[in-house]
Amino acid sequence: MAAHNKLLALLCSVLSGVSIALAFIYPLTYWSAVLGFASAYLLIHMAYLSEGSYVLSYLAGIVAYATGVYWLVDTISIFGNFPYKLSLFLYCLYVLLDASEFLFFAFFYRNLRPAIKAFPFLASVSFVLTELTTFRIFPWQYAHSQAKVLPLIQFADVAGALGVTFVVFFAAEILHSIVIERKLRLAHAVGLLFIGCVLGYGVLRVDCFQDGKYPTAKVALIQGNISIPEKYNRYR
Image (cartoon, rainbow, N blue to C red; front, side, top):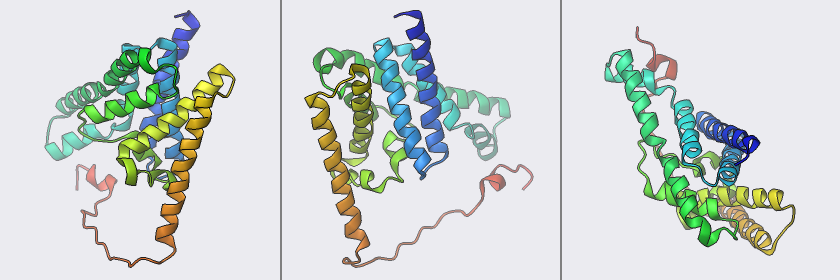
């Protein structure tokens, strides 16, 4: 890999981690959806440039978790009543362990590449398999970054959150493939048609719940109504 490609792959790795972390720090917003898609695209480009580097994939995971759960240090210290240094150690251990999820992505990407590299869903399948097979303390998925995009997340009716993750990566991978190849292939067109059908299904499902045809149900949610600042105030 050329020196400039190494630097670009490194940058994509870091930015991918930061993007998905910010998507989860600011959930249920269109910014979260954009950041989730951007993270997928950057991760795909990193894998393309580095041929699925384990080191850069792991780096993306470390950046993502270290940024996304920065609040965990205080949470462990205050709610667990641990010394701050021990809380910091446990936080670092958590980040290193959960970031290994991205090592699985590199593994699947490298091993599936010979079989399906001609089709624009190598990274999509690889990351869905990653989310399916890895254990995470906080089971966040790329699908959750799209919660504000109602037509898209309706696809969870059909394929669950993993299906939504697939669509996010598939859309990013099609765009990446078109940008790299500078042409539209039949595989791209079929993929775009599939994504269009997913969104069309979502629009119909949203309409089903907005037209008032179905009976409503009252739902109650009970939780501790304590603000984040109050949680982290040691003197309260």
